[in-house]
Image 1 (cartoon, rainbow, N blue to C red):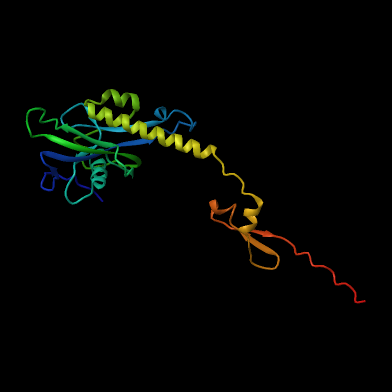
Image 2: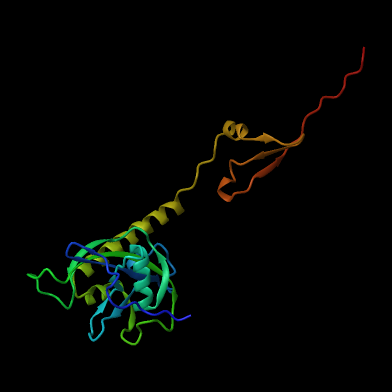
Length: 228
C-alpha cells in the first residue's frame, strides 16, 4: 500500500512564534562489525537525506501536526523523507531551536523552529517512498556525517546521539560481565516447596529462564524394629 507525504501546514503546531518540528537520526549497526566490545563509533552508520533543490544532507524532520504525537511525527517524517521504518527511542535526544533554511533573517520573528530529535534503529528500508523523487538518502559513518552537518544544532544532536549510544554499549558490556552470585543453601531450602513424597520444586536458580526446576530426593524410611 502506497503512502503519500503530507503537505501544507493546516495542522501544524506552533508555540508562540516557534513552528514545532519533530525528526530523528536513523541508524544501523554495520554487519561487518564482529567485535561487540569495539568502539560503537566504528560500528554504527546514520542515514541522511538531501534537501529539495539543495545539495546538503540533513536528518529526516518536519512539522509536528496536531493529530499526532511528537514520536508519531518523527516516525512519519522518517518514512516520508527517507523511506525507513524502525524502533524509535521514546526518550528524545534533545530540543533545539533554529531557523528555517528559507528564513535565515535573525531579526525576523518568522522562521523560528523548535525541533524535537529522536534516535531510530532502522529495521526496514523501503525501495519506494513518498519523497524519493525530491530526495536521495545516504548511509554514512559518524565522522563523515558530522562533517556534512551544515548547521550547529545538527552537530549537537549527532554528538548527543553518540553519547547515548556509548552509554548503552557500556551497560550491555557490564550486564554480560556481571553474573549473579549463588544463593546460600538455607535460602535455597527455604524456597523449595514439597509437591510429592519424593520431589520438590524450586525457582531460585531458574527464574531468569522462567522454568522451575524439579529436584528428586529420597526419603529415608527407617526399618521397622521387631517387637520384643
